[in-house]
Image 1 (cartoon, one colour):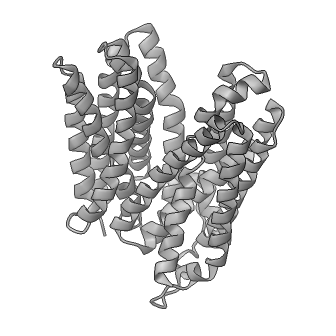
Image 2 (cartoon, rainbow, N blue to C red):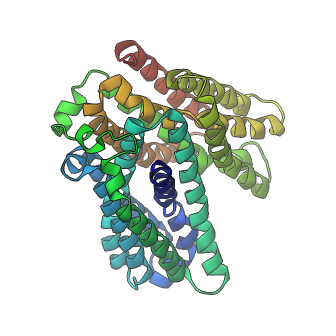
Length: 388
């Protein structure tokens, strides 16, 4: 039973990542067929992001009412239905409508899954599960690409991904009894029965604000690099666009591979130690990108930065119950998710304005400043909220 439930969790994290990068792959075909401006992708993205922020903030209340298993099942089912809705949409307003359950489902499942694993499993599983998210985020665009190149169109791509999500939701459904009772006989459901906290109560918790800022800055770094690294390498460093794009994608490969390796390292080192090591490696990678040496050093620095990113997200999440208590972890992880989505919505476009009006050469400086802020905030958390 233990092996089956762990397998379900891994499958759920693959499902969590599946739709994340699909819109970008499909949009060049979608906006032409929908006869809308190319910029309208931002509207869909904003609706989804707003939904994820709202559902992340509500995750503590939802999980108190339903439990982690049912919340995960319903959330994946909602995203599956939304993706199916995308596959039958013929007008842009339909995409906007289906983006609402898409975002609401994504935020709830993200917070519920992360908290469940943080409470009941070791740090190695958290790292490997987030590695599975990276696998899902890679599979989604690949499925869409196969549908497009095979002449089936973007609607078929969304249909295939929705079918996979429906299958995953069914597997989660049949596993629900195991979420309540673990193989060792302990009652998981009882650990989730606590008073749901209001947003005001959550923010007033000692250390809540620093951990929200830490998460906001870190997740913004990921998206800023993903969005702007290739442009920086091409426009400022003079590297060919094709090479810059290839090395830019290796940043995400570095994160995924790093998390797979990090799972083994967690058996020897604590979450706090791994977060600090990751931040140190990130700092070294950013310096490599920034220094006026050969382009090869900058390219390698990008991959090094990705490897440094690997332990930070899963280790911060996994350490949350130990720092704040199991009764507050769902609430804290919910606001961390909301902070992450807020940061990824606001800070990457802000750098776009800086790049346009000042210089794209400030790319490593920008992510360096965000990293320093996250380091300072994390050290504040370590001092005021030590692991219990």
